[in-house]
Length: 489
Image (cartoon, rainbow, N blue to C red; front, side, top):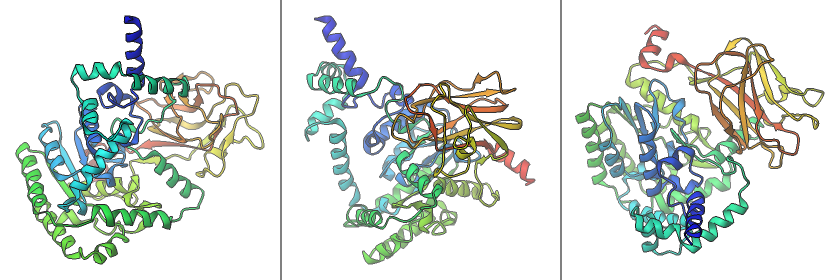
């Protein structure tokens, strides 16, 4: 009997079918598997855990508009992205209470909908519904509360729950025996809408980028019926902004606040809904709190090209990084180069692969388009693809795109380096690459003339790589002092 109960508890603990343990430190370090856990109250809890688990000396906080911003694309500090979908200013104020003096800078992006006094009740309903769907429960708040409780009595009942065991057993038989079987959507230093980023990349790299009007209409309607519905301007939020500023002043932490720009298609909506005066009041309140610099990038980023082609509400990841870098540079009186990026894509190398032929040229994976790709030969049992550089190169990031849904994709890969092209040394442990697009950040300070990517698992079909990109990092932008020294400021 004891063995049966222990086995039941272990299976439920391992697969956690109702996501009870999804935000404790161990699970978060490995990565959460459910996008719904990244917003609302669950997302906030997740960010709190991650903020304690990962080293950083600066924080960016905002709504889902900044959610996809990669902190490693932000200059001068080691940022943590604490953004949460539909986060309100009171939650940001509570988060500020948890900061200590190791944080050297806080950057906050403010959205107009946060000043809608009537938005929170709607959001609370949305969060409850979202939790119900994530947990797979009947719509009973007491059940949800019980599952989310941290007391051991509730936890024990969960681990011995027959419904949880049935769902966990189904997951056991449905999940391939691979550590990369499940999509990781939550990363140590920030969130990534991986599917959205992939779609956007496909549009760009195949020269088929276009605004999807039907989806745009849906998103605008969401703003009309949710974010800006029954709009009542909140004077309380004005007070909360000042409270956030004063708390950070008391802690001696510099603060940069800015207005999140609106897509040009949102401005006519505000006018149509009679909210233009409220929007002007929002701008005035924000600039009175943070200074006129809070509107530096306003509406220079209103063009739809700065947003997802199917979503006028949310910034592209590079847009969020560009705006934040610009605001930080302005704060420290720095002048960023045009088209400033933290990573430079390299092109001065000789493509190499384990097999080559008329249709197997490695160069097809480095041509900056996913319309073409490299495919290993059918007889290649140990495929790999990489490059030879003219001098030892330190890579900081590798982006791997594998679009095929069948066995041509590999769920895990390893990065290897060599000084002579013969003896290869692992530069990383196996990396989960079950996604169509995998961003691999290279740790350490290794320099090598040869770099390659090789699959760890065998697969069935010949391995296909649609696009591979190598990047180096701008080391002169690691700190404000380094940038000033490099630029002669």
